[in-house]
Image (cartoon, rainbow, N blue to C red):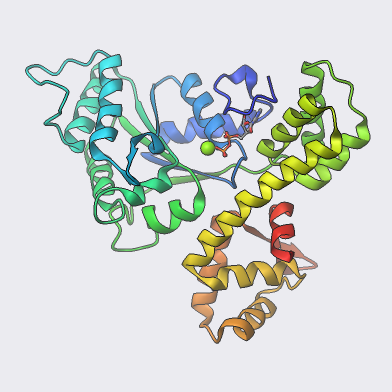
Length: 347
Ligand code: ADP
Ligand code: MG
């Protein structure tokens, strides 16, 4: 069912995304570390789950939130989840009781790697909602990354996949641009999941309504896509409310309310990192879309800033999929990716 609000797990339930799925599977196979990015509700969790079911490898999916306890990621709970999978795979660890485990994270990676080597199967460790790793240990997740770096250097059968909300993931946890971060300089591949283009979004809603035998006027579908753009999660939510209320306005209203509040909380996350981020988004939403003009706007609000620092901020926003750079009449201009974000910022 397309309008099922949970992440999809089976390929049959995933609409389109053939190419992205193939790309993700190939990346997981080739690279020790893959980073799956994309704005909220574009279908990252879904495509991870489906890829783990499709790939010729042993996939272990871990939602980092499940290892949280009292606002922190508990190392014990994380290890238990990994060990649960070890048990499921019937990996023998002679003479060692699993609970409470004397094994540390690197021991567990060692075990998984030798299991993979024996079976000649790649082991994929997929960590979703990985931004929460910043609440692991006393150094913002660095201890976990050291274990990952150890595995990267020593384990040819293990692959890592990280995904989740981008602000926290890229800024606070991975620190790929930070030369002091444990993974600095190691090769990884980044994949960004984009929202659907307009025609596919329309097809998505049509298909979803067809599945539940509901005849919906084309006009409703088009208005919904105009308002919500191609973010699959919002389309699902609109479809879901529509099916239950049979009321286009109501369905759209509820979906927008949810989208707005989610985006507001992400914006405040962003603002905590730098208020200049929000000023940049504001400038672009006002139609100020060239590098130098945006910089002027930001400086007028928050004081002067070096070119390098300003470029870094723009780059980060691009990496986190808030904005995209494109060429217009031979000039580089920036635009905001999600129209709902634009609406929040202008309000
Ligand atoms: P993310 O992890 O990026 O926030 P999810 O995988 O949770 O996104 O997807 C958000 C919602 O959209 C879920 O209801 C999911 O079922 C739906 N969804 C996402 N992509 C697709 C797709 N390609 N086909 C069908 N449903 C999808
Ligand atoms: Mg998700």
